[in-house]
Image (tube, rainbow, N blue to C red; front, side, top):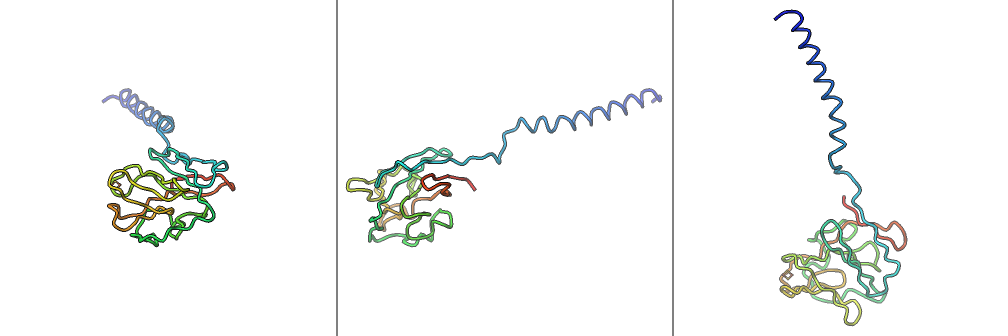
Length: 171
Ligand code: FES
């Protein structure tokens, strides 16, 4: 190989490396970002006692229910009354399964086979029933004993960013 060919190849090699170096940031900017904000703010200021709001979030329905002050979790025989074996953030591992007693926030999927549960509101908010195999859940989304479902309704992660605004968030 003569000197001229060698120099041409060295220059071409450096040019290729430089081009690749400049291209990486550009190509990376075209890729979707995986740490983008996927939270959703839900204004519940107009939600009356016993009312339900359904919001679509990350491909699933989330139910936000305004519980009346007088509403106590019913004295039902429950599968997991202390919610120890349930999908929920740490703050919901309590009797009300929520950050505050006045709102319940749960995914609408039954924990048996995933059917959409119905909210029972004949005499105010009374809990949930699944149309598929009749599992029943109380006003904290806790499943009654004898139901096909064995786990309480799943609670998404959320926080209050204002008195009446709930932010659903993905951790
Ligand atoms: S899917 Fe709800 S009880 Fe079976």
